Amino acid sequence: MTTSFAGHGLHFLIVENDPDDAYLIARAFKKIPHCGTVSLTRNTSEAKAYLKGAGMYADRQQFPFPSAILSDFSMQGETGVQLLKWIQTDPALVRIPFILLTGAASQKDKEEAAKLGAVRVVSKSSDAEKMKQILEDLAQWLCSDAVNSGTYSRIDQETVSLQKR
Image (cartoon, rainbow, N blue to C red; front, side, top):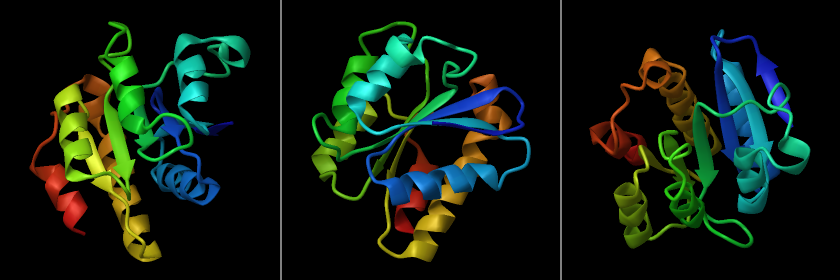
């Protein structure tokens, strides 16, 4: 699924198995004028096919190469951290900002994601309003010129403040 909201060329790949969370993430991006487009994959296997441009994802007009990847941690099969490890093996993919969304990752998992190059590790909230705000803040940051220009930073203080909300 690709959702378009006329943007400045940014495209975000969401890897999320929970349809409610996927909806909230896509909605957060839609609220930002001229942000870009979003594609959704439901697990790491679909995400890998998308990133390789394989099978149904071969048409890059319909499934553009992502500007950033937002991945859930806990999914059936592989985890978001395992997807990040796979991404690190491909020089064409390693430059894509990777954000890990988690409600279940241990501190060790979060630290591993940071070591592997995640630019953010964002804790999900069970409070719907808090989660909505976390996602809107994240979408705003991703739609900023920092991601478009490649001047984003790896795990930093902003990650900590997003997690404390």
